[in-house]
Image (cartoon, rainbow, N blue to C red; front, side, top):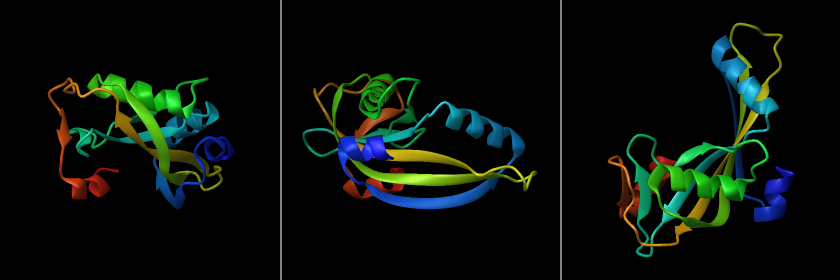
Length: 144
């Protein structure tokens, strides 16, 4: 969280805790050890429309090892839609405490997911059948 605040300031933070099965807990534990950050991106075009992936809402993914948040945002948007963007801000952060539902003695694993805002650099149409620009500004809150 410190690195994020140094680069982007202090985003709004929410925290929730929930239980998952042992397999999902183990995957979360491994990702946590790798230091992966969950990333969601609200990308706007020149008209204010938002890039939407009908399968996942807004473009989303995780940081790769040795990849900073800014680089991850650009990569995820490029992989999702084939467009380039500039990262504007870290709008919010969610801290998820994840517990193993089958083992009360297992430590709670904490995962951080950050919602970034970005602007598209070119007005190219996104590639992919499920990716499009959505001009409905009210829909953004439902997507993140």
